[in-house]
Amino acid sequence: MKHAFVFPGQGSQFSGMGKELYQNNASAKRLFEQANEILGFRISDIMFDGTDADLKQTNVTQPAVFLHSVIAYKTIENLKPDMVAGHSLGEFSALVANGVLSFEDALQLVSVRATAMQKACELNPSTMAAVLALADDKVEEVCKQVTEETGEVVVPANYNCPGQLVISGSLKGIDIACERMKAAGAKRALVLPVGGAFHSPLMAPAKEELKAKIESTGFYAPQCAIYQNVAAKAVLDKDEIKQNLIDQLTGAVRWTQSVQSMVADGASKFTEVGPGKVLQGLVQKIFKEAVVEGVG
Image 1 (spheres, helix red, strand yellow):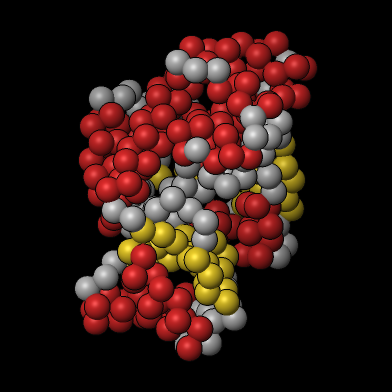
Image 2 (cartoon, rainbow, N blue to C red):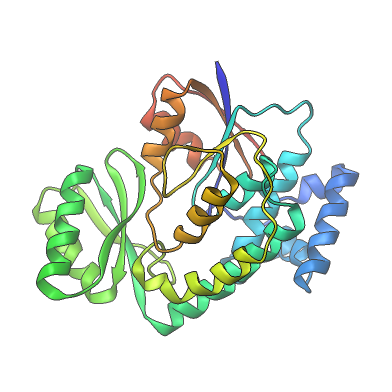
């Protein structure tokens, strides 16, 4: 039985996140204070006492979720993960967990990523939509048709679990695609309250900005395999890990395929580290026999 540790992405934040860790663990408190210094503002105050609106700002959300996950992970004793994976932003937490990135470097990358994504969203008004109960290949086909016929950007962005896929693209493209998904038999196709088309070609300006920062950051040999979003298989080469991390902003989060690969490689227990329970639910939908638990 192999033990996988998985790390959530944006959307799992909540007011009060990480507060117990700060209050009950001296090393956790030190890491929060170190993060406040690195970021140049007291993100811990916003995490513990901020409003939902405060926590929804991308430049707060992404570092907040990362910090909660990584600090919670560092407080677990006798850790021996066989493999790690993270959903979107969560991939940065996973790379700290398996020793590829230092805590400080990863936090700075997450901060740059958040700011760059925010700028890309302002440059190109765009959105995402959830498509429920339609086969993955059908969703891919509809996206392709819309792009070919209209020239609008629409791509599959998150393969969350069978029957739950998120698409990403221009405002017009997503509108057309939602209608067509419903016509093709989707139970629902609804636009999500997000700031832009994450994991699509519309994030290209953010990708360039993040790429420069990633390329000047030290990457170390992993202590265990990471199943990366764009590769959906075990990756152990640090240069390959670096390239996959660069490609992630414009590529799809292939979560369904990543979990299937982990299971094929022997994973049967999955521990979600950080805020929320989203990944535990997705893992169980992908592999019903999985043993899941959360640490946060």
